[in-house]
Image (cartoon, rainbow over all chains, first blue to last red; front, side):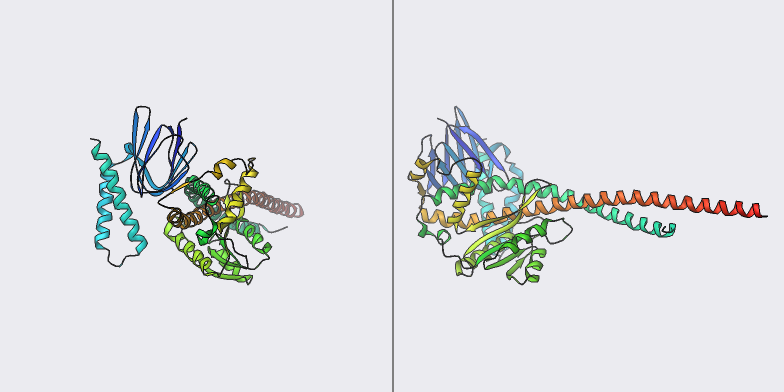
Length: 135
Length: 293
């Protein structure tokens, strides 16, 4: 019985497919999910999400959210998610630089804004790490 | 019969109206496209989150989080999402009709100027009013959500509900009242939706009884998920309302433009008739004068 994986962000439904296994980064460490997993609800951390289908491997970068496993369905709710092929290294580098600069200049910045920038920095870091290792 | 000059004046004014409504239609059409895309893109996320919550709500003790505890409802808290500007057909009026039907004591938070004006005019209890730009940045809506949650936690209101024009398609927007807090009533709503769609709510009792693992633990998952749910849900509804607003305005302006064009045709016909009559009259007079001579 294969798993159905669905990854949704506020902007779009990023990924839907029938897969064999998936490894998800959670706050408690990575969680591997195989068919027949017991119901699970966990918080997702910034990191790499690894999907295996037959002999195919696919990597995705995700940032903060939740994962729900129920029966043979895996739902991931993430702030951001992107498949490896779609990562634009230059754009991410620039975004990272901008965010870091803003963080460095900001003194009494709104805490929510500060958190958003920090998340952006970490998410960019994950994307770059993922892309570079592949080469 | 009106004189040719009067008719000409009316033609001019109708032409101006047509030009304005045409311009507004075009503006609304381009805004509508963006707003509809934004609203539709966010829907899967909101739906999935609601489903996740339904799954949790079945499995955790009510007392674990204030958002889950059902209390006696003395005052309802309603977020009313309307447009800032008028000229959007019956969009806002339909929402106000629902507001007037609410007889139980309620306090309102208005998003959009029209709603704030209506609540003030009808002497209902307005807690605060907010306005959002057309882009509906998440930060703008978060302020509204945080305000409402604070009122709820302090006990000023015993429910949090949102009333907004739900976007179905360009021609149809239905005013909808959706309870957000406490989440116990959300479960009823989801069950309702499911039974509407033909599923029976008790379809999977086995799944609900099965133990669920929470990581790191139920409380911290709830603490993270519940506020996010409320914020995201309100954000999605405001996006939806914007899509509805621009759709309604575009349709209203299109009707106005079509009416102006029709009126213009009728007036032009009347003008030409009057002009022809005047010319005929003049010729008759000249001919009569010649005969007399």
